[in-house]
Image 1 (tube, protein in one colour):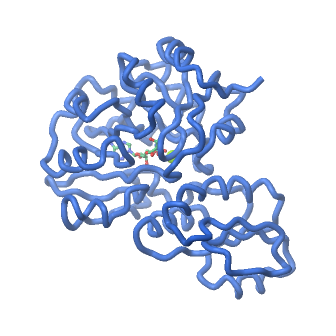
Image 2: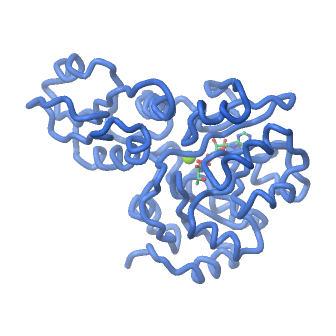
Image 3: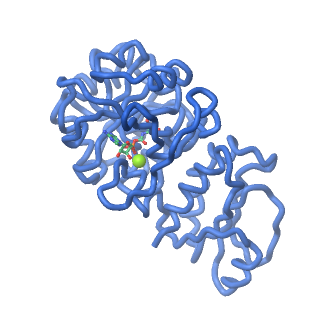
Length: 319
Ligand code: TXA
Ligand code: MG
């Protein structure tokens, strides 16, 4: 029997009983549990096989609740919350004492966001606690953007995926921390840098720390298909080089036909980066199911969401 359901009251009952429910957000599906339940939080780490040093994001119903979670809000953090919440920005700020160390992996800071999905906002408004929710995929696998992706990963481990349809944005939130009150991007994501800079001015990016990463989104290999995957800016050359293999192609817009290609996914025929982001993970899931020898992914234009997509593709293709 399918574990995918639209029954919010069932989700509330499970969450009140320390169980996990996969929830829809505008970015990717999350594997959610009560932040104050030690059992729920431990089973998030266990179910995902996530190392305990990787902290979780706390999801709240509205920006008014931010001050329940964090002890200090820099001016630029408040500007970002006002401009983008509900939406795909996560703020990393000093935590209040009530936030369990298990959530933050012992760090003095906590990551918080207000997700922009009507069903999950309804759910959060009816719960008496915020939800911890990492992306609902086993550690380092491709993130889920459809309820079926979560079901395929976890049908034996959790009782319910709350069905909110396909995720509209399709890649994770942009994570922003603060060092001496100045904002720094720790993970590129669904909110493009250009939009952020319009609100708070120039922002630094620090998303390449490989040792003791500030965010596992910084880990070199992440978001990865099982099939060998390469990233290229010269499709014709790469296809020729691998012409003895069963090739799958992940391509921005449809300009290429080649007999060597067994399966092809076009991210946006209209060359729209938002459309491309929303389709990216589903495309990787589809390609990974085709029993190909190799997936060849095309680099996208390196601005706006293209930068975030290229970041995910380069981590998905690291050996
Ligand atoms: O869009 C999203 O952010 C999705 C949806 C479900 O909300 N969630 C998500 O969670 O991507 P996850 O766990 O896959 O990624 C959370 C990231 C991790 O890279 C983690 O290290 C970082 O947030 N993070 C959490 N707390 C942190 C902290 N205190 N300092 C720095 N990074 C933190
Ligand atoms: Mg993740």
